Structure formats: structure tokens, C-alpha cells
Image (cartoon, rainbow, N blue to C red; front, top):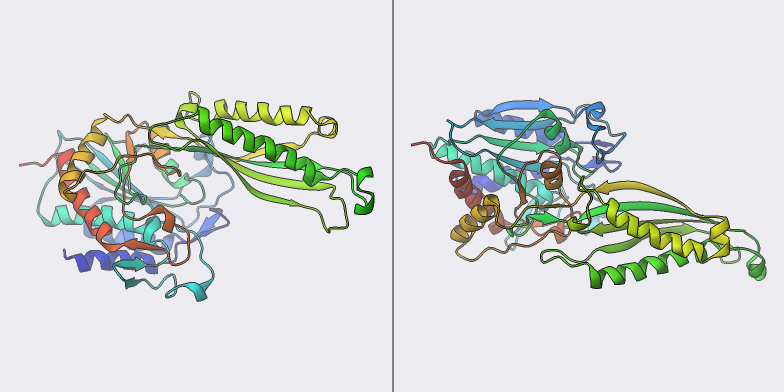
Length: 414
């Protein structure tokens, strides 16, 4: 298969609208999953096409509730080996974030275009290049007439952008392997660990009246500010005390603050949304963030106790999403083997570092108990943005690395 043909397959995927709706409540993934089904059939893979089932997923703490999966199937292709080799899962999500500001794109986001060594289009980076690369790697190995010893399982999953129910459904269905690669964009760096996250909504109440008599009311926004300042101080403390050789310190981001109606009115309500990204070492026995959450709540409660109004009228707090961190030891065979193969193919020492953002690797690792690593083409800074692109050379190099690694990991028969 020529590089042009490999790139054409990626372009075909980008042309398919697979945007999520309502942050995963619904989605258009079927448009590209039809392409994946056709390709897996061409490769003579054993097909498993199934829609995630909410009632089965809800037993997992990280399952996202209320999402609809009619006509949103996962597409799995299995290449059975001859036996005696290690098995491998190659996992990637086919869904993409929506797009807007069409006048600022080089072309329409679903009309991929090459420019200056880059391929532009929605999903080019996150993460259709990864899905295409793992598929093209299998096609190349099959074209060479090679028979592998170990099984290879290709997972083209839905609803990653909405939280990960697609991959969680694969875990629930029983797919297992000796190792897994999630081909999210890493610029071909090896990432055997990533942060966990917690997202909260806080609601504050006050007493409203004309701003000229402010001292007779209670400003709900200013009460929220007390919590914000306490959170910022906690973030500074964590930057000093919480360290990981592969990951940044934990962060607390004030995402939205809403309240009030006019400058002349003391606001009687305020809503604050914030997110926390934490280190895997701060996880509990289930790899979730209850340990760091305990620290967080202690700080919030102290801030509340220092204010008479907040003590009598405490804000409500709701955790509306959480994702676990995960960590694979640096000396695991999956890390060392992929590192050696990548360095050889790229003729340079590969970079191994942590991943500041989350991925479905956590679900494969924490719930499927499958050693997992994140490795793929593209720069995460391009994900979700206007004029999203992937470096074309990185895409082709990723295919070459995966071809070599699959042979090494699974073993070649004969």
C-alpha cells in the first residue's frame, strides 16, 4: 500500500461527520463506522458490531449516564493469531467534537486539505489519524503475507468525547489482551500514565437589593470568590508538595462563574464550575480521586467556616464528572518493547513522558486490567480547535512503528 493510499483512507474518515451531540448524549459516529466495517471486512477480520448498553455500563463508577446509543455502534475487528504469541488491543475513538466558525477554517472541516506537510480537517488529529494508522498497519502486515502468533484486536469506539462509554463497553464485553495501545495524539511520544480529573458545580445564595445599599445585602459572587481564593491557594500548595517525574502538578481550573443581573443589583445567586486534575498517586484503591477530593473538601469547608453567612447558608456542591488516572510502570515490557521499536524505526531515542490530559487508556487499564500505553500521531494542542491538523509525516511514521511493533509483540509465525 502506497503512502498516498494510506493518506486517502484517513481523508475518507475525516469526510465523515462523526461529531458528538450534547457532549456524548448522542452522536453521528455511524457515518465513519460504516467505513470501518467495510475496511475490516476487506481485511478478513472477525467483526463484532454492537451498541453500548447503559444498564451494563452503570455498574462502573466512571460510566456516563443518560447517553443514547441507537445507531452508534462500536466496531471491533479481530485478527486471530496462530497461537503462542502475545495479544494486542489497538484502540481509538471515531467520534469528534463539533465545529463552528466555518469562515476561519482553510476549508470546510469535513473537506480535508493538505497544506505545508499537514492534513487539515475535523478529527485529523483527534483522533482519526490514530484510528487510520492502526488500521493501515494491519493492512500492511497482511499485504506482506505475514501470519502473526498473537491475536490483534482493533477497537473503533464511540463516545470517547462524552466520557468513554464506548471503550468501557468493550471492557464489559470481555475483550482482553496482553497489552493495549491507545492511538491518541502524542506526537509519537510514549505515554504510560495520565492524570485523573474531577469536575464540580457549586451554587451560592445571597440577599439581593439595590447596589447603593450593598451593605444591607449579601453578594453571592463575592461569597464564591472566597472559595476561588481558597482553591487557588490549594493549587499553589500542590504545585510545591505534589510531584511526579512524568506529570505536571495537580491543577484547579475555574471554568465558569455565573450570577447577577446588573451592576446596580447585589446578586442573590452565583454558580461556579471548576475542574481538578490530579496525579495517579493521589488515587484510591479503585484508581479514583477520593483521596485528593478529601483534601479539596477540607479546604472548602475551612473557607466556609471562616464566613458567618456561608456557615449559615452553605453552598451546594455537586460532582458531575470524574475520570481516573492510570500509570504503567516504566519497566513494563509494553513500554520497553515499544520504546525500542520506535527508536529503531525513527532512528532517534523516543521520548517517554506522562499525559496531562485523559484518555480511554485508563478504562482499559483500571477496569480491563490490561497494560496500556498512549501513542499516536498528532499534537494534542490541535485537538478540538479551528483548523485542526495532523502532521502527515507523523501519520506515516506511526504506521511504520506500529507495523514493526505488532510483529515484535505478537510474534511472526514462520
